[in-house]
Image (tube, rainbow, N blue to C red; front, side, top):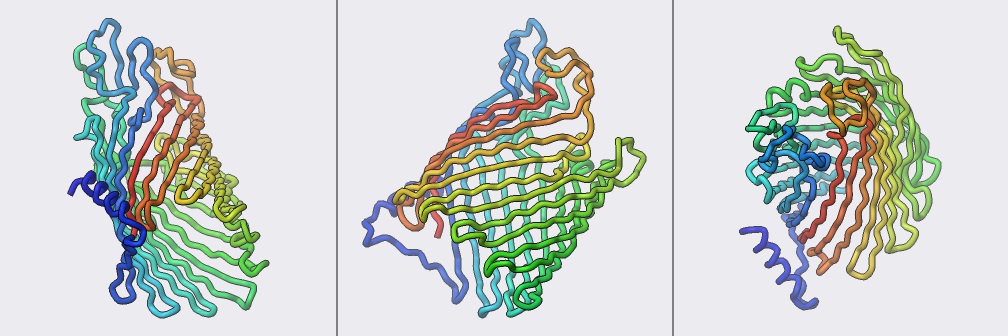
Length: 442
C-alpha cells in the first residue's frame, strides 16, 4: 500500500464522529504494543548543503572553464528537491512485576527524492532495547541501540572527471552506508536516604561499508567510570562523576587514537515545581597516541558543559533550553571544540500545538588547514594560506501540530539553516526545508 493510500485511510478514520472514535489498546497479555506510521512530504532548496553558484557559473563540486557552454550539465552546485519520507515502526513495553521493565523498538525510515532519485534514495533502520530494575536500594539500567543508515547526500568534490569544458565531481551524488551500535550498563546503590553511588560502562562502534571510508572513519569507543552524589531535595540531587574513555580508529588513520579522563559536576532533578532537568560542568583531559604523526601537541585539556532544562510556566506552555560544550571527532584534523545553544517553546491551543525553535553552533577545529592553492576569488583567505578553521551554524524554525484524535495528528514545519566559515567558500551554505506530515501513533 502506498503512503498516499495510508494517509487517505487515516484521514477517513479521523473524520468519524467523536462517539465512534477508535481507541487503540493493543496488548498481548501484559505486553503493550505501540505501532506508528508517519508520512511526510518535504521540500529542501539545498539538498547537498553547498554554496550558491557564482556569477561566472562555477558551482561547488564543478569547475567551469571560461567559454564553456554546457554548464548546466554539471551535477554539482545548489539543487532543490521534493522528497517523501515514510517512517514505520513499533515500540514494545513489558513490565515484569513491580521491579522489572523491558522495552524494545524498531524503526524503518524510507526516503525518496524527486531529484536524482536513484542516487539519493535511502533507508534508515534503528533498533533499541532497554532493561530497567528498581529495587529498594539498588537500581539498574542495561541498554543497546543499533542503527543502520546512509549518510546525507553530498557531492564527491575530491575526485574530478573531465567532461568537455567542465570538470565535475561525478555524475551522481553518493550516500555512504554505515552502521553503529552502542551498548551500556549502569548500576546505582542508595547509601541511606541521601547518598548514592553508581558505576557504568559502555561500548560504541561505527563501521562503514566503503573500504576507503572504513580505513579513516571506522572506530570504537569504550567508556567506564562512576558517579556519586547527595540528595538535597526530595527530587533533586547534586553529583560528581569521573570516567575513563578510549577511542581507537582503524589502522589506516594515524594520529587520532586517544585516551581521555572526563570529570563532571552538577545537579539534576526537579529544581522547582515548574523547572526540571540537569546542569553540569567539568573538563576533559585527552592524550593522543604517539605514532610518528607530526601534531602540535599530543595532550589537550578543555572545559566541558551540558545543560538541559524543561520549564512549564503554564500548564499548556513548555520551554526547553539546552547548551553543550565538548570535543567532537573530525575528519582532516584530530577534533573540533563544539559549542551549541538551543531554545524551543511550544504552546497548546486546544488541539493545535504551535512551536518555535532556534540554535547556534560554533565549531573550532584543533589543527590548522591550508586553503586550495588555485586562485579562487570566492576564497575568504588568500590562496595557499594556512589557518585554523571555524564554522558558525545557525538554525531557526517554526511548526504546527494538530491532533484530529488521540492517535492521529498532522504537522507543518519550516526550518532555515545556514553556515558561515572563515575558511573557504565551499563550506558556506544556506538551506530552507518545508515539511507537511501526517502521523498515526497507537
